[in-house]
Length: 448
Ligand code: ADP
Ligand code: ASP
Ligand code: MG
Image 1 (cartoon, rainbow, N blue to C red):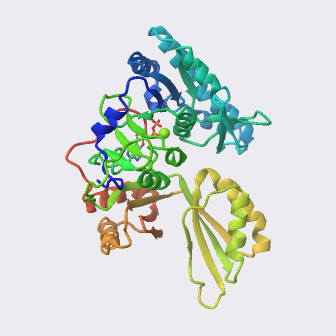
Image 2 (tube, helix red, strand yellow):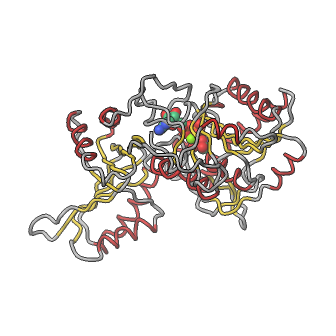
């Protein structure tokens, strides 16, 4: 597996983080607290960590698939839910698990207090559904710890400073809550507990022979997360890197050592200098089903039209990912521009584009949610001839047709039909010799 720029032994990390009294932030995802048994299991684990002499802050997600179920419910009520009310609804999921976990911990003989995101001092901007943390003031959490409590915080939510509106951070955002709290409290480590034993070379739900990675640099993890590997929320990895928070991703169902995501080399973890690197270049394969493909058909092929399209999209607060512009169809002076964006942002982007159609002068819009993106991540891809050849041969051998391609120094991505995505991931994983000897364990969750 590829390593960060200097070598760190996992035992060293464990030893360093095993000093007497630590402040640990533990985050438990939805599959870890999917039912009452799960909540009790997590509670025992938290109590053990506190009994071992640590100060423990716990961030919880909503139970199981609660967030999806709340979204489904809202969709049955209306197809145009106000974003503010959606955040009020979704933030309720985490409030349920935080209170139940506090009850379970109290039952097991330790004391715990739960806090909503706003009570925990998570201050965000006002963009409902994908709010960004702008400040963290965890004084109530600090006070709870000083009094000997375990502090439990609802993940994925915050509050605007002036209007005190409730916001949510976007799907998977509890990871970012945990890291932001760890940074603000200067925690020794942020443990992300989930339903697999760590970060693998591909999603173990798709590639059962994926290999567990013992340690990964935050740069590589950023790339995997940005490419859709939902094991960690992208912004949590960015935040951890910026503030030097060591992340340990591991299973809440086993005691196995997980994967360490290492912040920059000069931070809290002492890196052994001068250890020779023998690194294979490939880190892993990520896939993403959360994006849709938009094609703006018949765009006048003159300067300024692409800019106009992307200004419209930016105003609709959509995040564009891949972009492809075709050469203009011979003699027509018109071209097609395709791009991908998150499905959840599709409706707003389409509305904005349609409104701008007369002004921009394109002919029509095609919208397709039935696509998936596969990305191969690794250092120095461009300087290793043969990587692309192997990549495209593997897809062709597997009979996978490609819709879009983009490459960078550290990534090759393709968009395919959604139904072919899993086969494509397995083909690429195998072609780059990433398959391990053992079957990866998936302990729970529905993968939804
Ligand atoms: P949680 O509810 O704990 O936040 P998530 O479902 O958000 O859990 O993330 C864990 C899931 O991420 C795993 O069950 C796995 O299916 C998926 N996953 C995707 N890519 C990877 C990867 N490279 N390594 C491990 N898990 C991955
Ligand atoms: N409950 C939220 C979600 O399902 C946040 C999270 O789990 O991190 O996306
Ligand atoms: Mg998650």
